Amino acid sequence: MGSGSRIDHQHHLVATTAAGTTISAPSDAISPPEDEHQELVSRLLRLRSLMDENNAPPEEVEELDRIRQRLRDEFQGALQQDVQDDPREEYDYPSEASPLAGTTDELASDEAIEALRQAFNRVPAQRDLPPEWGSPEDRSVQRAAAQQVLDEVAAEHQAAASLQEEAREQWPPNEVSYTEDFDAFQRDYDAARDRAERGEQVVPYMTENATGGLGAREGGRGFGVEIEFDIEPGVDRQQAIQNIARELRDAGLSRTARQYGYHSQQSAGYTDEPNAWRLESDCTVAGELVSPILYDEPQTWQNLATACEIIQRNGGRASFGTGGHVHVGMHDFDHDVANHTRLMQMYKAHEDVLYRLAQNPASEGNQHRGTRWCNPNPVPSEGYSSISQISARHGQAVNLYGAMRGGQSAHGEFRLWDGSLNPSVIQTQVKLSLGMAAAAVRQDTNASGPRMELGSHREQRRQAGLGQRRRLSGDDWRTTTANFRQLVDSLFQRPEDKAQATALFHETRWQRR
Image 1 (cartoon, one colour):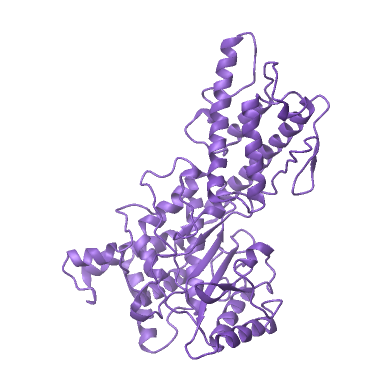
Image 2 (image 1 turned 180 degrees about the horizontal axis):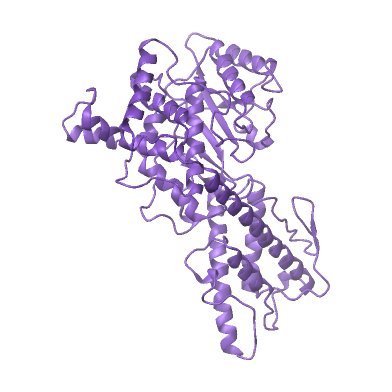
């Protein structure tokens, strides 16, 4: 959530935010909520501080969401009890019709935020409070900091709502629809097959406006890639890593000629500087190259191609066990459970085709590396009722832990992609990831029809008596490509983007469960 607020629990009279703002209680500050509510507020602020420092484990992110729910329920209950105890007392307090009394527990709407702010400002009955809460002045400072949290949430909500509306208004109609025009899909598929037969690069690579605005610096989303690789048998591993690190520095992609420890980029903090690529170690592979924050600009795609070429020239390869992870900015998801639900229901509706597109086209036997490090996400058919219901783990196909924290740094990680050192494949995987996030916010997702979970197409062919190696035609071909065509129409508007995804579809195969 933005910069966040900090509370010094040892010196409550001064609370400083990450942005350097000092919070002090006004001289006429009123008392804070009752002690039980105060305890919840304290816990909320501590968790917020951990999240802003990227130190909150998933269970504490979930607890933050539960506290929001608890605060809403507790404040509503306290109002009803106070009115019964003293009907002469008047409070400007959320009513049963307030958004806070509804089924959603997200601080998403302006009305909900204002109602909760009023609850924080309520003057409670005078009574003794535990000594650990300090003096009334101390508690007032903490209440002021809590209100700043709500102010930040309100500002973030308004900014995100504006971005969502802008995205819907600026998204043009499809220039071509694979769903309605099957022949258009078939032409692109045949063109990819012809390139393959001629021994040419099958999946096109773009360097100018590659994403159609999805990854633009202005109006799009930042993204990042993690490229895992191994070293070819017979090549000295240590020397290869040294050579790769040196050439990355010499090419202006990294600042040093060394291999860093695991997740060192995350610890150092991300930047969009083009020379901030970082070579890291990983216990499962020889190395992992982590990009800075990227945008759809010619230099980004030139640097990606250079990085892949340097790794390959020095003996690097995308072995069967390597993965490719794509991080996508989700600053406009705004803790809105509906956005997360749309994203994950779209993923589940197209899970099988996504795992097909995730396969490294150069893998032996046309097999995906498996789901040990990218398990299919469980997604309830009715969606989520709260952010805390979302399963957000490092080992899942779509890891939304970084998105649940909200704010400008919110991001999701698409982990299902296989490792590849083909920049065209990586670019297409990036665009698929960007497209899914954008479609969820535009409320333009296609999750109709039966869910096609991992292995569905192979099972359908088995039940229909169609061999896995047989080339389909006619209605069988239309049926088996329908889910892919629906997905592409949801994600992309331009014909060139759909053709690029179709080329990757041509190069990959349906996977087993």
